[in-house]
Image (cartoon, rainbow, N blue to C red; front, top):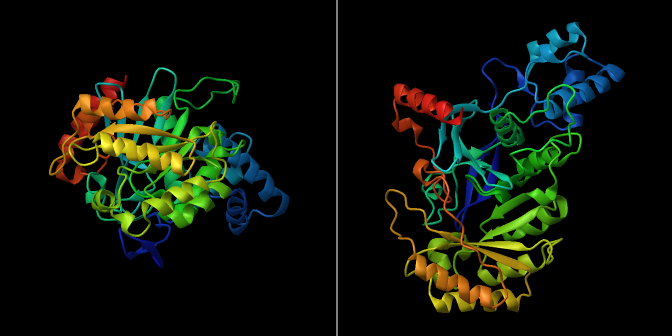
Length: 404
């Protein structure tokens, strides 16, 4: 497979990473992730021309994204001759599930595999009034944030628009949330209500594919999720933040985690390239940011590293200096094997939170979810290669039983 070299900035220096759509072993093209124009072009290349191609594009789009169908044989308004042709040339594929786990608190984690054998993860977090799907944008990560388990992986490659959108479609499969014939497409309540681009990888280093997937997700004739229910998280890729706001208009979350250069250089090495002041100015300039659509600052609480009263007061000062419509999510550190950090004491976290709250800035403490299956914030890392096939099968069976 031929791929063009793509330069992705790493922790402090650019890292060349191959980029390209992996070819399937059976030679068929996956239609998931294609734009309407690309879908029509694929049909025309298959010999379906003119009005027929335009009509089939509209029909396929409906069956794939509104009905969740992956079998051409079920698309009853398409002529049998064309259904057979489509099945020979194309596929409507979800990511392959290598492992599925269910936490004691109801959190679900899927280990997924690409056609070229790379693994990545997604997590679904149910709450009383909503359900949030944490979606990955890359296989691995290049940022090497010191507290993040995912950051210990090398970056393998970008996920395609289809592989990103496919995660949301797979979650709808698992949750049984595709409408049945005769059901209202827009009125039914769903468990999956929100999407956060906070899984493996840095979304702004794979912006074109992330954009393609999210435009499909936000399309009223596609997956139909409001941009106000989508949040993209970045560690601070400053040059791409403005473009993200202009072209996607989704909510922005920033992995801040420290309030001075020395500490942030240590735990978020990208700070050496784009410093705190430059990052906060980009936040102030983010299109659409307002008191109704605040920027979220993610702040992981690390014992004796970034959790002092002085740190809290400096955080308040910075937010007010840049006049940011902001809230702060305080995240208790989730331990993982080999980490050099400890979680701040609960009383220390509460004291930090109070200082920020007292200054008029919301600073809730996030309740850790999915720790028992390594699905919590900062814990995502593919490690299934360490398990035998029998062990994977046993865990998958247990997860299916628990889900039922």
